[in-house]
Length: 111
Image (cartoon, rainbow, N blue to C red; front, side, top):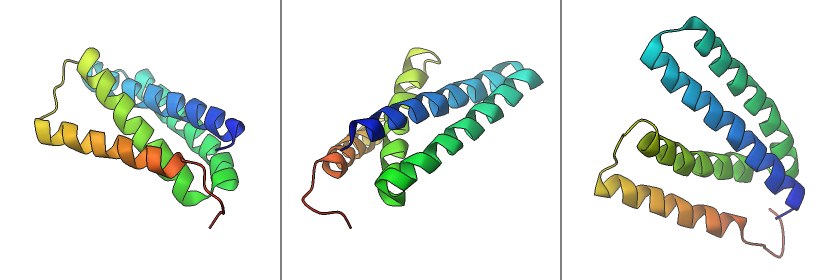
């Protein structure tokens, strides 16, 4: 995996996670400015994803971003908002991590 791709992925993930956290904060306080912030963050994250799709392809970019967000959002939900996953849901997150590792392993050719 290209280091530049990885950095853009981390950046996009951070933006999306910030947007998700702002969305959750909006639910808690109903402040319209928080909703606008959330929407702006999602727009920026999607613009960053365009570059990732160019570099890594649609499947890899979207899949890697989705799984990374899945893990980080669940950590934030647990730590900040006190939400808990069932054992079955935790197994699903674990399988997502395994899937991302397999997708990001270096390969000989590119489809």
